[in-house]
Length: 140
Image 1 (cartoon, helix red, strand yellow):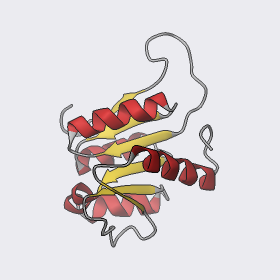
Image 2 (cartoon, one colour):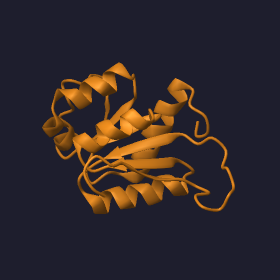
Image 3 (cartoon, helix red, strand yellow):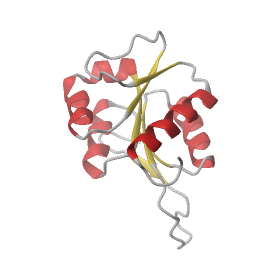
Image 4 (tube, helix red, strand yellow):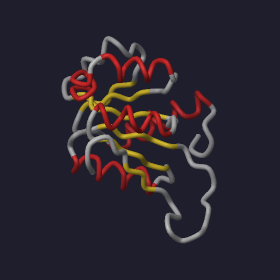
């Protein structure tokens, strides 16, 4: 993936079959191995997964479509500056922070926090709860 692009993997790609509406998760992390692992886990659970490996890529992804939930690496989010945090707040997207030391992010009050490496069961439960709270289709 190169600068400014956000990749999308979705069930049914290339097979001519439209899958039912699935909640979309945007994973924002510069650890490509973790992004790939989370994409497999979320896709197996029926989510549509988009990902970005930089703050700039995340902003581009948010321009393309607003996800149901954003899962973001807290240190990357902090490095991206206020523009990404402001966009997430403006679009009212629920955010789950992946944070190695669980300090949260001052610009995103109320964001869920999962320490890294993430407990997958805890992460899936948190995302399901956030989706249920906002009435997103699919996983409730």
